Length: 596
Image 1 (cartoon, helix red, strand yellow):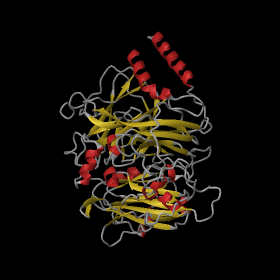
Image 2: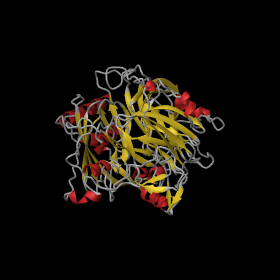
Image 3: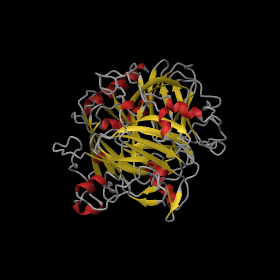
Image 4: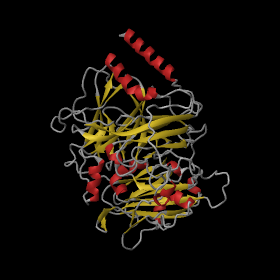
């Protein structure tokens, strides 16, 4: 066996050298992401899912702070595509954001190349297709930004990294779910919860049928792993926990947090967290990894639980017994609020730079604009099921916002998004926020819907300074955390409650503010913040110019030159070494597993 291991190690080393895979911090990396359909059976039912490079979920994009990143996206679907990178801050270049307000879609059979720098960032993020509910069929993968070697994180380097992608799942694909919403139906209870694209371990023969493939995460006893957890689902908050193991929370969406241990944590749709988990339990046994639905009627959702297996290398026993329980908070609404507010920024820790993250004294900065944004239950507008913000259901522009600005396209959108809920009839149109460049903005998200929701702002992180049940009033500001509120890009808003955020608008462009819940987003619960520097900017320091490869559509479709499909099969790096190795890595991994 030792000889086999040595031979395998030498084989991998030779492959790495042949393809020039390097760990040097050379500052630039290029990937090809080939997006296509495959047939898979995550919950035992064959269905069409969206794969990236033939993988579901897609490959991990692993880069380092300040890298220049080039992503060639090839659309092999039979419909338009855009890929987005929420939480990854593309400074002054909303052209690369990958949503319809900023990019024309990549048509079927064509490709488009994204270019941006992960400037001054670290942390756990994920990518996914942004159009037409496609994330409900897959197309997602982790996007991890590692710290530079000269910057120490506020913890000892772990012994390994683990990516865990959790999310609710339907046996109907995104086209069928889209048809349901278009016909006025709600999506109903999901068919299950996936962990890394796989269904639940058969912990209960009554609830889990035979023949479902489940995820196994292999670990060694005594070692500590950095576990990146992402809720890539559609609309369900999931409670994440590992049987008998403690989760030490260290980072969320790009910022280190004050370390705190959890036995379980609620992870809302669109949110990402990083934990340190030490394998300090009985190494002769396996353990459950669980992601279960929260804020739902448990009697209707019994089958909607994700279960994977944590497998110690010396284990001889299968995981046994009932699943570890989530918090019992049916009659204690304050628990979830207190848990959320306990997640605070570690202001003394190094961030992406070799100096403390700091909080920039945000609590003493004068607020320039206040927006109160209210959601309501789904409604019918003009005979269509719609979701609204401040009474407006958003219609995507035919011509992306900043492209319409550059070419002076009239009536592409309206700069009339109301700063307060309006006492008027509900509307459907392209209404966006005329935001002030370098304004310091307070946004109060009010959830008058019946379900917990998540909200995300592209291009920015914001301070989550407060949340509470009931109506927000100016007196609510007295409860704000004005020192070490968590700085993140996606926050939850509980039903019948409000969440307050503060954000400094120094990133010029057009940035999407939306519900992360896919059904609400698809039905119009979004807007954009148009942020333009009013001063002359001859050197393009505050907003980069239109990229050379920009796509044209809508009123500017006449400018688009004919394009031919140009697909490649490799992933290359600017250090001169091909990263085809990364595409083949799953094959090597399976080969090694078979040998060992």
